Image (cartoon, rainbow, N blue to C red):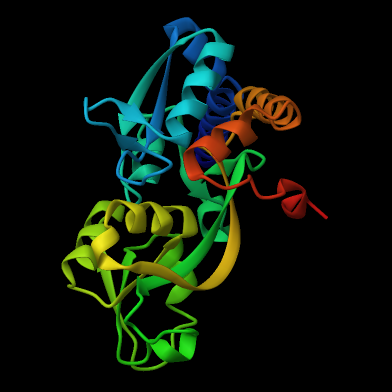
Amino acid sequence: MKNLLNFTKKAAAVVLGVACFAQVAHADALADIKARKKVLIAIDLGAPPFGRTNAKLEPEGSDVETAKVLAKDMGVELEIVQVTGPNRIPFLMTGKADMVIASFSITPERQKVVAFTQPYGASQFVVAAPKSESIKSLNDLTGKRVAVVRGNMQDSLLTPLAPKGTNIVRFDDDATVTAAIVSGQVDAFCTPNSLASAVAKQNPSKNLETKFAIKDIPYAIGIRKNEPALEKWLNDWIAVNVKNGKLADIYQRNVGSPMPDLSQFAAK
């Protein structure tokens, strides 16, 4: 009886293992998207110039344009799933989105949870503040209130580098960070240079300027792990549109500066 019980347990474990393997092996988001005839793409519409809404409340920005071209080339309808920086991964992992196109920077921590394509763009992260603020380097942040998006790339970059005495103030998204700097609630903010430039342009009376750069970080399309067909399709699509200059053109028109050289991020 004991041997039979052990055999039954082992058999059940094998069946469960086979079932789990089959589930992973048959996971095919690309096929699901094409069968649905619609792709659900998570985009942060509160992070200009990557994502925003215009005066007609229509989505626009470099990530929006990228998503539109991708959906057209895939031959499916686009549905934008609006997200913020902190909820991009939860929306992806719970199936509310098929992929994330939201200036989604590649980090080792995120790679433990999601799969990234090859980079389709890059951001230079900077510290920006009003001209009246005497800030030239990290050391000058002591005693300053510096805004970041909670748990986002700027938080991860600045927090370990900031000198003792820096008051890092965390907000839920780029929109609330922007409101904080414009209202004077904080002295400076850490953000992609493109967003710093956009905020300065939209609020000329605040005399905002970039004080110093921290680091260039590539961003890519995020998908769930174990989706080889979708990952291959996206990487092939990125390679084609980097080569033909379409992604660089989208970046230039929206960000206002040339696309960074993505070859610097190629695997060594």
